[in-house]
Amino acid sequence: MNLNYVTKTEDLVPVRNVLISVADKTNLEEFIPGLLTLLPKINFYSTGGTYTRLKTILGRNAATVLHRVSAYTGQPEMQGGLVKTLDFKIYLGLLSESFNNEHRNDLERTGGITFDMTVVNLYPFAETIAKADASLENARANIDIGGPCMLRASAKNFLRVAPICDPRDYSAVLAELRATRGCTGLKQRFRLARKAIKHTALYDTAIASYLEEIDPEKDLDLYSLSENME
Image (tube, rainbow, N blue to C red; front, side):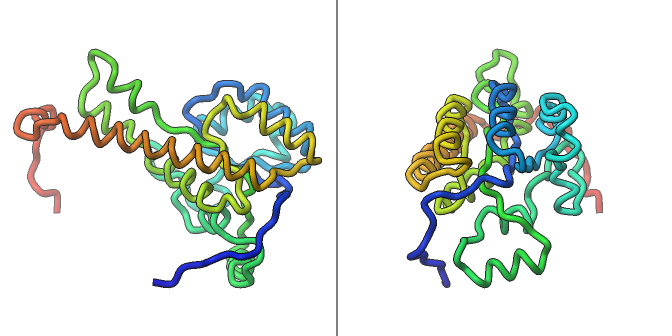
């Protein structure tokens, strides 16, 4: 198996393109205008309900700085939002390394961009299963796929990407951007990456623990079974 080992990277990375998709929209009203004030040339790429919220927050600025992920990838969202960000151009933009010529060639070939920051948090699985009337289907529908993938990719590439999974980190990120004239530092990106990996690990653990308690002999009865549709 061929792996990329990096020996050279950047400390300060200018934030130009932000990929944002959040279930918890707490404090976006302060964070997004704060980013725009510090970084007037910033671009936000977003999906679904997050896109709608950002459009409201940004107002007239949305026309120039807010972009739908589907417009960037050229692929519409799957019905129900099941596939929105699982696309080669998205992960090329998250995982490409600054000093890798082949990665730069891939970006040029696809018309791709690099994402410098991701703002992602996950479907509320734990909150859903904690409800008294929660069903297996409620739980299944709230298993996030794209969110953990984006966070893990961003965290893996902390060399260049700042992954933010907790709204409580917004103020510290803005403070660093203010101090560095619009850049994230390597140490900050690493701290955010460590937190993002822990966040996805706890999320998967909650799902696995819940599924362990499901008895397939009786708890699958909520589904009506049909013949093969072929």
